[in-house]
Length: 272
Image 1 (cartoon, rainbow, N blue to C red):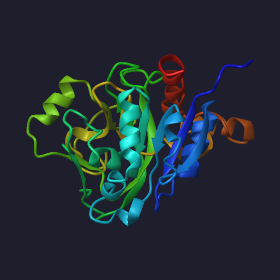
Image 2 (tube, helix red, strand yellow; image 1 turned 90 degrees about the horizontal axis):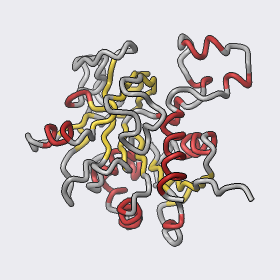
Image 3 (cartoon, rainbow, N blue to C red; image 1 turned 30 degrees about the vertical axis):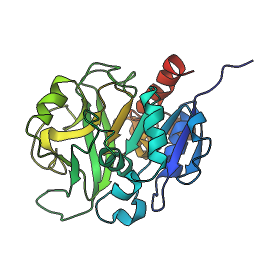
Image 4 (cartoon, rainbow, N blue to C red; image 1 turned 60 degrees about the vertical axis):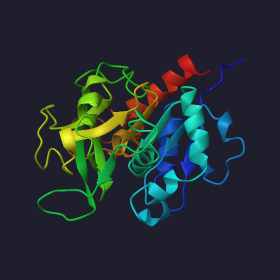
């Protein structure tokens, strides 16, 4: 009998628009998965992990992600995460993880915010390709087992409120000390620069992704599900040029697939 595959719930809220792409990346990494509506709470605890996809849950009214964060389904997800199941929040999902206090998760309350972007050319929503660098040891969290320290991963961003900020002057120091800041915005060569365009939204410390202290929950503003296949990469990307003209090659794994491959490895080793 073949071993059980990790089974992942992609939790859909009204207004999300990245659930299909997220599920596709989950399946491509060798896991099973299903899109689960926010109000289908019964039995959701049976899943081995959770992806909270991007979009505009509840039209981002009040603040991005805050209404979704108050939904009862997050109480279940919090409980399952306390048992070390992995939770990946992407873009709007990252905003919801921050708004419900799971990220950074040092206190039982909201400690940060995803503030409106700051860049010199665009006010509000901004969409572009960026590079992020893994600034921690490989495997520091559930989503980096296949990403070397200082490894560069190209991904797109698409958000209007992606700037990690906090009024707690000591929080950033704690996050650095705890090695909770996983990805920072960088150039394609890996140089971290605070200014635009390398830091596309003005996030403090160039933060692109933060995990909780235990490493099983991560909030990431760029979209790994939109950069998991070689065909999704920008036209000038080296990998895409290498496989140009090959349908099979274009369906191959791009660097961002590593996040989902790592999720699979983590579930197999820690949950199943």
